[in-house]
Length: 138
Image 1 (cartoon, rainbow, N blue to C red):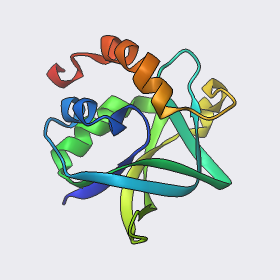
Image 2: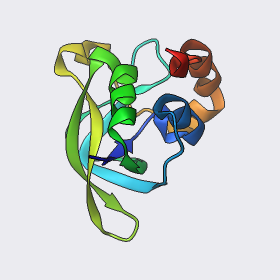
Image 3: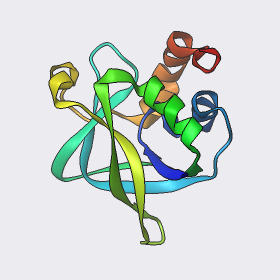
Image 4: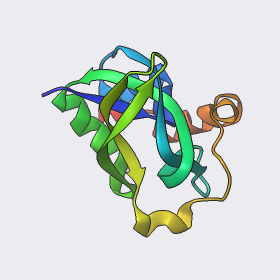
């Protein structure tokens, strides 16, 4: 059964999501309340954790098929746990979506402060792509 997927880091880039999921997906902006994203030490991507009063802006990909979710699970790896959350669309509508939350046992890898998507696009995306290029061929 297909699921919606909320992304908040590198996978907000549709080209990276295409490379990982293996197909183009319909998408739109969304917000996840009650969470915060932090930089991961030494990496270009973030980790997201529960945080009262915070919110994370991201992208909701619609109708992600099971085979793509398997690929996403493998891509996210052991640091992340896939959970179902409720996200808010620009229209105010609430949707269920899967997302990847940073596991508590890896919290020591998170750096204080907010991860910034614009900085990722300007400085981190090329480094990220060099490190993870070819994932789709695995």
